[in-house]
Image 1 (tube, rainbow, N blue to C red):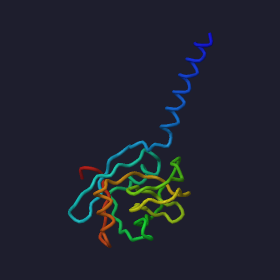
Image 2: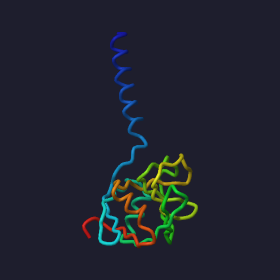
Image 3: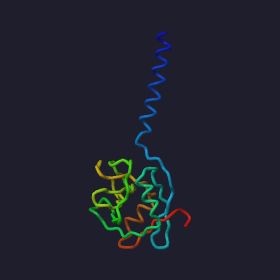
Length: 147
């Protein structure tokens, strides 16, 4: 009986570990494109309400500016509907996020600290991150993939 109970507990612990190891991982829901000049880059959006809200506005053209040396930001009008999306994240280089209080998209060109009111939207490839970091005042277009 003890071995049966131990086996059951081990199986339950394994399932709980799997569950907790996958919670918080972004669920990729949609591929979109970012276009700067004549170059197009793929972006993977998360499967949360805020990312879906952003995707529903596509195509959208934004002009980014440097914010410190850590991120490039562009303002959306009107603000995104966040819904049940996580409202905090620990952004790393290449993350695309939404900052609730200011209503801006933020692309992280450097790692940053855990932040409240910052909604994870998706990830840029390294090539896309470099392109947006060097985009200056060029218009950046986000659109549905294949358009």
